[in-house]
Amino acid sequence: MRRDVFQAIADPTRRKILILLGSSEMTPNEIAEYFNITRQAVSKHIKILTECNLLLQEPSGREIYYRLNADTIKEVDDWLEPFRFIWEQRFDELDKLLSKSNNKKKE
Amino acid sequence: MEFKKDIKNKKIFVKREFKASPEEVWNAWTKPELLDQWWAPKPWKAKTKSMDFREGGKWLYSMQGPNGEEHFSRADYKKIIPYKSFTGLDSFADADGNMNNELPVAEWTCTFEKIPGGTVVNVEMTFKSEADLNKLVEMGFKEGFEAALTNLDDIFEKQKSYS
View (cartoon, rainbow over the protein chains, first blue to last red):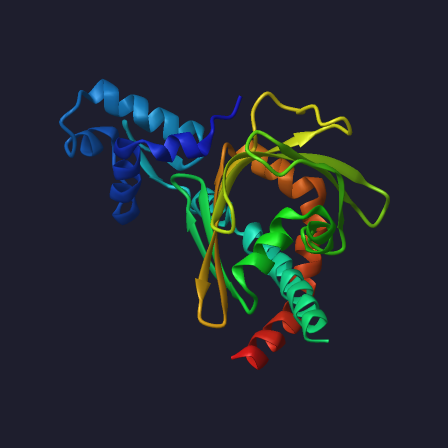
C-alpha cells in the first residue's frame, strides 16, 4: 500500500533530508552525517521517503546514491492547486449574486 | 483573490473582497436559497436538501452534474459568531445525510470583516488526506476545474478589466 506522501513530508528530519538532496545526490552514510540520530533511524526515514516515491535510488558500485524525484515533488506542489480555480469560480458567482441584491435594494 | 497553500499542513487560505456589507455576504454563505446560487463550480449546481445553520446543525446538499450526476455532501457547523465567523467540517454523505466515511474530509473557518465599501472574506481549509482531496476533485470538481481551465482566457480578460 502506498504511504501518504503528506505524512512523509510532515516530519522535520525527512524534510531536512529532502532539502539536503536538493543540492546533490548522497549515500545514506553521507546523509547520516548531517544528523545526530542513529544511522538506522536515518535509514528508516530514507526508506519511507523512497516508498513515497519522493526519492530515487542510483546504485553505483557498492554504494547507493539517493536523489530527489522531481515528478513527485511537483505533484505534491500541485496538490492543492485545483482549489484555486474552484474558489475563483465560486467567488465570481458570489460577486454576481451580491451585486444583484445590491441593485434590488436600490430599486 | 489571494490563494495560499501550506502543503506541509494540507491547508489552503483564500482571501477575497466583496462590494457588499458583511450582513449581505454572511447571508449568501448561510441562507440555502442564496448558497445554491453560487456554491457549485460550473457546470455543476448545488441543491440544498436541508439546512440548519446553528452550532451543531448541518447543511445537507448535493452537487448536480451536467450528465445527471448527483453527489451529496454535508457541512457540520461547529462554532458560529453571527456576521463575524463560523467553522465547520465537510464530509461526503448519502442522500439521507449519513457520512460516507468515518471522518470528515476537511475542516474550515470563514471570517467576515468589514472594510470601507465592503467585506473581506477569509477562508482557511485543512484537508485530512491526499486520498480525500483526490476524491473531492473526482467527484464533481474535475469538470468544473477543466471548464475553468478552458475558460482561463476569459478569466484573465476579466481580471484585466477589474484592475
